[in-house]
Each structure stands twice: as structure tokens, then as C-alpha cells.
Image 1: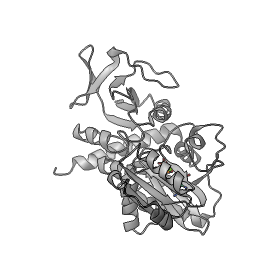
Image 2: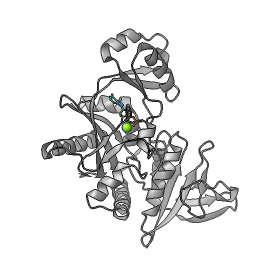
Image 3: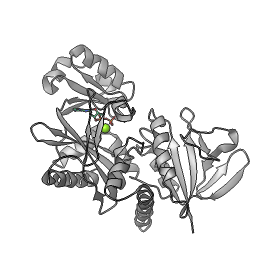
Image 4: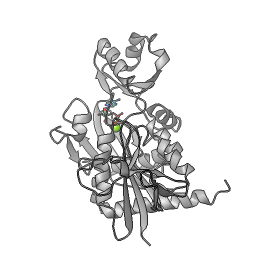
Length: 352
Ligand SMILES: Nc1ncnc2c1ncn2[C@@H]1O[C@H](COP(=O)(O)OP(=O)(O)O)[C@@H](O)[C@H]1O
Ligand SMILES: [Mg+2]
């Protein structure tokens, strides 16, 4: 029996357009002999869900009224316009990045509907998205994180910038607690820039982080699985801009060099993998994640962040790392769907 897979894409975060690119990879790599795709675009401003009647790439969301759907508690899609009901969905693959997609909100909705879905559950997604909470948990587990201070909206007015600079140094990084793709991030070199950076970050979240700037290398590790996850060898991202900003991430001309296998010794490779597993468990992850590290010049290995729905764009490292490890796109996507079913089964057997 073919499984009906709902692929959710778009969404209401600034990362909407990145999601369209990631979803293209997932849809192109769904093995049609095993799965029937239901591509559902979530419109950016309204949040309405539109079932796409045909797929053309690059993806866009066809918002014709007859495509408007909602998901019913019996897992069927309700077509609002025609009042018809489609076949039941077996597994949902949220290919959404950022708030209202990667932060536990959609995951909470799917959990309420008793639907298996790919990736971390509600809690793991919320933790992974929140750079303040995740760093505090990592620190508590003895994992090195970059020195940081968290600032909440109501603390902004009275903030002592001099004290902050004394503590974290200049330049420093300012970032929204809940965001991705480098949206709202600045590298501040002066007190004036720091003030501007705080103001920008607060446009994206009510809680922000200021961090010491690490000089070193950026390494990433791709992890899949539930209780006994597997990891790829780390890759390296060599950024030629000032830091790995939006252009460096997604623009072909951003000058970023990607080394699918980082040129590091076997010892360090193993150390990073071990740290990736520890981070994955510490942050209550399941299904998949990409864990990003800074290797400082003094040799300290910091966990920068864990992404619970890593990018699948043409420039994204997660699928490329698995391909290098011998797991091609269709096998990877099938594996992620299997992990979703496995996690769902485990939860089903509980007495709650
Ligand atoms: N503390 C830091 N030290 C050095 N570079 C940083 C630091 N924080 C962020 N950066 C740079 O900014 C990029 C994006 O920051 P990150 O925290 O990963 O946010 P996002 O979730 O948007 O990817 C990093 O990949 C890195 O290049
Ligand atoms: Mg990042």
C-alpha cells in the first residue's frame, strides 16, 4: 500500500522562500512507487493551506480558492471550496523553516491530530529553535557554547552597553533567539553598531542574544534517527564574507566554499560526531537535525546551534553530506519517513 505523504512548505516565517527550495528537494526525492505526495503550500501572510494540484519547479504556491484545504482530525484533507474530502494522510513532512514551522507550533498541531510527522516533536522543535534555551541546556550538560547574554524586550531600554561590551568584547554577534537563515543577525564592531544591532534583532523576536565573536572554522554534522541516531562526517563551510550571512548561505555568488568532508583529522571527526550525538539527545531531538559547530583558533569546539529542519536547498549541506555517506536523496527521504512512523509507534504505546 502506498503511503500518503503531506509535504508542508512555505509557511509564515521570513524563511518562506527557503522552504520552497527545500520542499523541492523532498518532493523530487519522494519515491512515487511507495508514496503519494500531497504538496501543501502554506501562504505567507494568511497561513492558509493550499493543496497544489500540479507540481512545477521552482515551487510556488497556487492560491486558487479551489486549492484551499484544511486537515481534519481523521487525517483527511477537507477541500473548503468543493466540500469534498481526500484520502487520509499517513505521514506529514513539514519542510518549513523558522517560527511557525520549525518551532513546535506545527508539530503541536500534528500531535493533537495524532499524525506521524518527520522530525523533532513539539518540545524538541521548540528547544532547537530557541537559541537561548538550547544554549542553557547544552551548558548544563557540560557542552561548550559561546559566551552569551540574553536580553528581553523590557530590558532593552535600561541596558548598559558598556558592561555588555566589557563582558563579551567587540566585535560581538547579536541575534534573535528564534530565527534562522541569519535573519536579524549583525556583527557589531562598535557601541553604535551594537545599539543598531539590538534594535534590528528585536524586530524579529522579543528575546535576543549577544555573543562573543568566535574566530575559527565552521563545521556541520548531519544526524538522522531516533534512539540510536547516525551521523555523517562533518563538513566545512568556508565563508569569504564577514560571516555566514543570508547571501553567503544562499547566493551562488556569495563566495562560500563548501567542503562536503571537512579536511580535519580522524580524531577531531570522531570528537565532533560524539558531540553531535550528545547535543541531539540533550536537546530532545528525533528524526533528523543538522548540528553546527565553531572550531576556535585555540582548538575549543563550540556547539553553535541545532537545526531541527535543516535546509534542503541546492546549496544546503545536509543532503550533500548524506549523499557523500552513500545515502542518496530517495533513500534519505524514505528513511526520514520511517523514523517518523517509528517515533509515532513508540508514542502510541504509552498509556496516555
Ligand atoms: N558567536 C559567533 N561567533 C562567530 N560567528 C558567529 C557567531 N554567531 C553567529 N555567527 C555567524 O553568523 C552565522 C549565523 O548565525 P547562527 O547563530 O547560526 O544563526 P542562524 O540560525 O540564522 O543560522 C553563523 O553561521 C556564523 O557565521
Ligand atoms: Mg546557523
